[in-house]
Length: 85
Image (cartoon, one colour):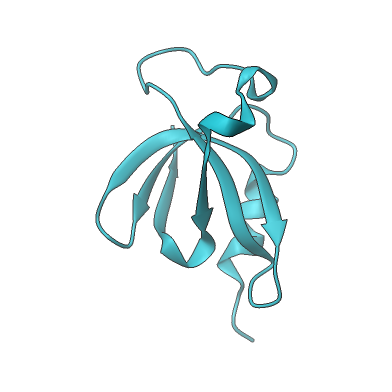
């Protein structure tokens, strides 16, 4: 059975709060930030991730302090790799 990588990532994030990650997208772009939410889907356990970019050298802000309008939505299939920092 093929492992749903979105479920694996969700399980790693579950129980952790304000975890800063570096994401490499399929396009090769790299961004640093925190996951603030997600939407379940039919194709993947998590279809879309809500994400806020943050400065990797600054302390991680509380997810509750981040305004939803400032975030971006990433499709799970656009993620190439995720590194916890």
